[in-house]
Image 1 (spheres, rainbow, N blue to C red):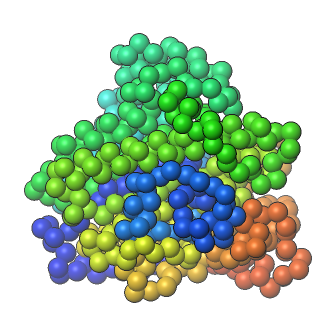
Image 2: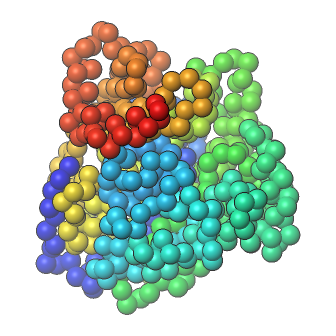
Image 3: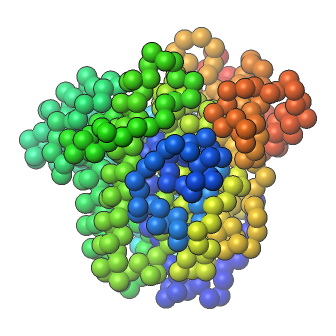
Length: 477
């Protein structure tokens, strides 16, 4: 949605907010500590997660219960966030493609306006290289970062060792004498749920949390700043520490919708570890917020929690991402701007997309949003001045086929209805309000809804967009 934001006169170097973005990898949107009525609406009323830090952000801020990943795979989703563009225009169509620093990003626009831009953890913006150097590489510099410690994700730490050299996380494991054990475990773990052979201080998200607190200790006092802390979890493999594993063994979690009966015991074990990873991330977030409070900076900071995409977690007997089902495209999104006139304790079920955060940051910073961006500022929603900023949310992906037909897809939702489109297949329609796990296709019963949602997809490029057609045709050749 195109629009031009005016720079507010009152937004200057002294009064602009800081931003602290906590960003998880593969956290599905319904696995959150929502109020009971929201959990019932999502079909997860029996889900009990212990997430006091994120729940406190929800109580102080606005929670978006219809957040959608523009592309349910790591690098493309993060490129969409950085560029403020939808998948079809972000130039990163697969995980093996690096972000193009020539494409303007909100990071660079913030830095040009006077922000100190930094972060740690898994950015996944140069994933194609398997080369992280010392963590502050040329891609991040050219994008506008002032400082950073970019590090490998879980399996990328393994591939870096085998194909190049260890990145920052691998080097830390090497210093602690557990790199070899980590690599061997990850290569053979599969969907195993046993504890990982690393001490708690070397567990990826614990290390990332500490790096985040170290960055907080160095944040400047004389300029506004943006800090993004990227956790590796709850992405698979399902590795946890001994302590995390023990904390969830006596607890029960709902099985994946449509998960075959013979797989439910293993599905429960996986879901226990998934919960343990989310709760551990919450603990790290709490410690980071305490560190920020100790520096006296929390009062001037807008805090956000989000994820790049979700995880199917056994729904329909499937695991992973890269698919159009809700488990993969639905993401958590919370904005605590209570110190900046934001509403408190509000849950909004209106369509929003991950890259809407890009325009939101610029809006609060008093920086004009580029005309060609497909990013809507969420600030009016946070402040309660409007009820919606976009009628539909879109997710799409071109996947590399291994067997059978092309696996590309597009989907569009208004929060109540959802349409899934695939080349060469009949469109599928689901009424999410009554069927949150998409078990009954209603396309033949509601052709009007199909056409309305299809128009919402095609009006913004969709299957007719030349760039998307070019890449689609390439897979057919």
